[in-house]
Amino acid sequence: DAGVTQSPTHLIKTRGQQVTLRCSPKSGHDTVSWYQQALGQGPQFIFQYYEEEERQRGNFPDRFSGHQFPNYSSELNVNALLLGDSALYLCASGPPSGKPIETQYFGPGTRLLVL
Amino acid sequence: DAKTTQPNSMESNEEEPVHLPCNHSTISGTDYIHWYRQLPSQGPEYVIHGLTSNVNNRMASLAIAEDRKSSTLILHRATLRDAAVYYCILRDWNFGNEKLTFGTGTRLTIIP
Image 1: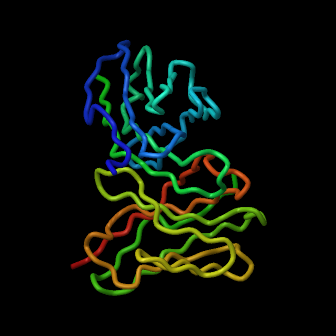
Image 2: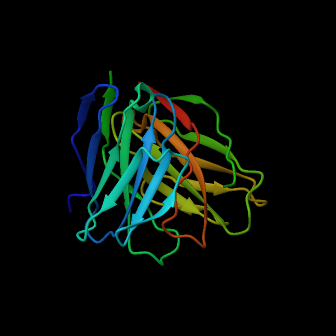
């Protein structure tokens, strides 16, 4: 079992550009969540996808958008990048919905640097 | 989301037990107490969770106060590989895959 995988591992962009990050969930999982982790802070929830739709959203602007594919993999898109978007972006997957208190499994993250 | 309070940092000697405290005075009756940890350059990983009774697994033990307003994560014999940031998180049992709300956690340093 490969666990949660993310690509790329590192990325450097300039202000105003757009970026796409990718995530493949753990085998058997159908729910994907994205988190942003600034240096020295805990991860902050961006949004969650289930059945190819955004199910929950945190306090992030519309510049942050996502997509989930039929194979449950997911993309996070960030438009009009700001310096403050520099962070570690984490993907987490969870097992099929309906089961209470399931463990979330995290990927290693994508480190984004905006110059 | 109910709030948790943890010390910013702790130190422990290698091969000694470590007790990581967490206060959650506003916990509701349906909140589970979860612990995750984040090793350097990795994503968070699940450690343990419990509701009312103390819990043990291969990684750690969780001791929950009788009034559930506090809990303690116990690493029985710390190794250098346990150096990480430990997060205490409350999760409502009604919601299986809902978001995790992280605080700043406790940075655990293990002294060789």
